[in-house]
Every structure is written in C-alpha cells, then in structure tokens.
Image (tube, rainbow, N blue to C red):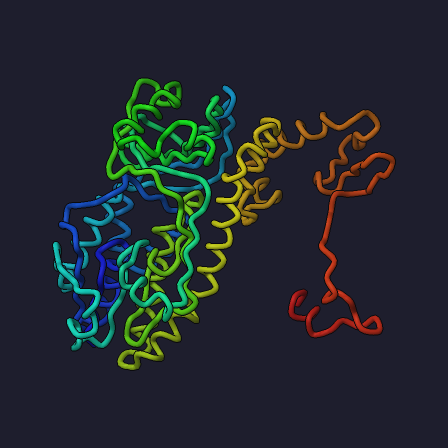
Length: 435
C-alpha cells in the first residue's frame, strides 16, 4: 500500500513508524509544513497505563522516550497558602521537541520518507496524492483537511468559555502542581509539571471575567507573560515565564461523526480534541495511531475495511476520554463555585472531577489523604450527626437535612421511565444496563 500522512505531529509520526516497521514493503510518506526542529508548546505528559501501551507497540521508541522522562507520583494542590499532596499518581513528563525528534529518527530508521516545509494544496488533495491508497489527515486541531470536508466528517466545534495560554518556566517542580489564585480581577489556575531538567510547563487558565478585567485581549505575548508573572510571583519563586506562541485561546471541543471521507482517514486532534486538564491530547493521538495502524495491517489493501476497523477499535475509547475531559473542563469553568470548599474537600473534588477517579480509587492511591478528607468532613458535621466510633460510611451515605426533612443519605437518581419493570419483571433495558 501507498499511504500519505499529512502532518508530522506525534500521531502522524507514530502511525507511520508502527505501520512501516510491520510492513517494510509499504510506501509511507509524511508531509509536514514546519521545519524538522520547529515545535510549539513545551512538555507533554503520559500516565503509567499509556506508557505500557507504548512499550508494547514499539519498545525502541519507548526506551528512548523513557530516558528523557521527568517522573513523579504526587499531585499537589496549592490554594490560599495551603499545600495539599495526593500520592499514588504515576505520570511522566517529556519535552514535546524531544518526543518529535525521537519519533522522526525512528521513522527514518524503518524507512518512512519525511518531507518538511512541505506544501500541500488542500483543494487538490486527492489529485496531488492520486497514487496514494490512503491519505491520513493528522494536521492538528485546526486541521484544514477536516475543515474542507467538514460536512462529510460531520464535524462540530464548540469553543469553551475559559481562556488559557501555554507557557513554560525554569521553575523546578517535583510533582504535577495546580496553583489556584484568586485576584480582584478574577480566578486563575496554573496547571504545571516538570518535563525535563530546568524546564516546566505552565498552562494558565482563567475565567472569562478575569480575562476581560485583566485586559489580556489587547496584550502581546510578552505583556501577558509579564502580567502573569505578577499573578503567580510567589509560585514562580523568582523564575520567569517563557513564551512560544503563547497566545490566549479558548479550548475548541472537536468531534467528528465519521472518521473517513473516501480514502482520507482523520487522526489525532484533527478528529477529536480532549481538554488538556486530563493530560490526554498526545496520549489520544498516539493511541489512535496504534489503532489505525492495526486496522491497516489487518485489512491491507481493503480501504473500506480499514476505515471500519479503525472506528470499531477506537470510537468508544475516544468518546470515553472526551467525556471525561468534558466533565473536567467544566469543573475548571466553575472554579468560583468550588472556591469556598474546605481544604481537603477542594482537593478531593479536583481529583475526582472527571468521574473516572472515585472515592475508593483515591483511597487505593493515597489512603492517608483520604483519611484527611474523612476527618475534615466528619468533624464538620453538627452535633448528633457524628457517626459512631469506627463506623464511618462514605459521605454520600450520611444523612442530610433540608429544613424539617432529614434524608437518610445523599444519593439522588434522576427518575426515568426506563427503570420501570413490567409486572415486576426486568426488561431487556435492565439486562443491557445491569448485565
């Protein structure tokens, strides 16, 4: 097969590497509009589970990436002068530049052709690459290919309300750290992590009110960085902020109802974006690259079968991640609502914001932290509502009072007609949902 990849980001490179390594007889070529050593952004982050997938897919690139990792187990929440640590969270940071460099070298080793500063005429895409059996659109979140075929891809884009900018710093960090700040202008959060020695990523977001009150819209990158250095002066601890296309943006939530148009398959952020607050953008692109490569190798020569297999493999995992990311981003959009929560209650709400991390899961990661959450909660209950010694139910199972009505627990389920049995017997609906 002859396969053309448009876009030399992590997703496009990883797909080309895996496919060419497995099928040296395939003709695979990448076209990237930037130079080989151009990169925008700072670091990327991967969980332990994602790293296991990379090791299984290509141990050689995994070993090279692993050697460059900044690794940590803790998540730190700093707010109102208090520092809260939650352990048991395995993550690794890596320079985006280093990641691309490693994947480029691996692609060259297996025989992928790389074209940098390449010009692709989107209006004549299928003519320019008429001899290609497949075209992979891996040209990023602002994909021109996706936009040309927006109706065919059933594309929807929704710009979310918070504003953010991606910066870096020389400030060393020993954990993934959230810095929350309340200023007279509004609320801010800096999502920060080390990605190599002497370098850390600082993704700073703020509410629309803060964005407007600070006047960021009329500022240059340099002016924004200087202003934010003032907001986070204590947290930066004498270090400055580094800019690299650090413009203010609103996160575009991208979805595509179908992932192929004819022989064009869409990959990475071009097809589905996941909010960076769950650190899954690059992960999503590279895991989908694994799925697309498997689909090509299993159905070589049968392009419609490749496309169907690709969606079968990846549609559900992508939608699960996107849902978790959507819930997470809404938590940060409502920062002011959570601000008055007590110290450990706030940290737990942050940890469990995507709903993929539960009370029990946090307890497995860091039992000591969960005990502090419980202590804070139970000591806040009114006299008479305290549980008996040694009998602490999960807070959701503790009583709650509304005026003169007391409920035995805090579990609320939306009533739906589907839950109704027929003559006392469960229906197919129950069997599907409850197994």
